[in-house]
Length: 232
Image (cartoon, rainbow, N blue to C red; front, side, top):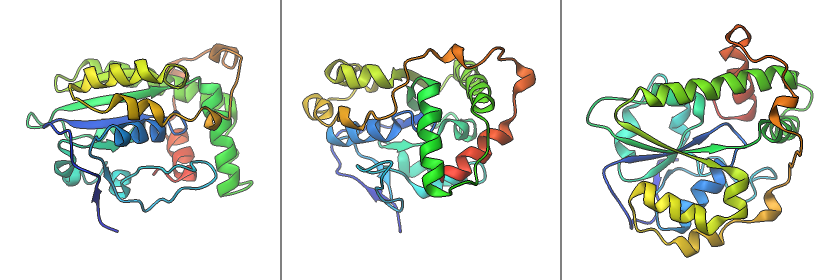
């Protein structure tokens, strides 16, 4: 299926990227942008399912970003979802400028949600231990923060998943200000569905990991999990 451009309304020359770890609220954010009349770059190859009943809002060619970023030109003035491990492969030539809406969520909740999804997709095939994922995800997020600070043509706004659900109107206002676009904030906030916040973990993230150091880093672990979940 070819790329589909959602309804054209608010545009600029920036590429808006919705990013984060899988199960951090990236699909929810894409739905908010769509409701606000932000054009999207999607293809609908990945259909809604039990894990994302309101849709994934993905573009299949994103998976090959490491080897092919020629499609980025189509994303000008639109929003596209790119999982965070692939951000390092963006074309950072001076003719591109990116605004990244980066979703943050309690990593314990992310892992619980990923585990449920992984079991539904391929029962018994994913045996990565939770503490290993926690350590690698924590290191990965640190890397992202250091990486984006060094890039002149990238602006990032970090959004907490729980905060967006609790205060959608305030989140919509922040997003519009960051993107410098007159999106429909009322419609953006209206799409938030608290009932889909299904994996709630009360304990803080650092209860799961004794030590997070560079020695624990293993990018293959993250890649293995993302492939299992269908993001690579």
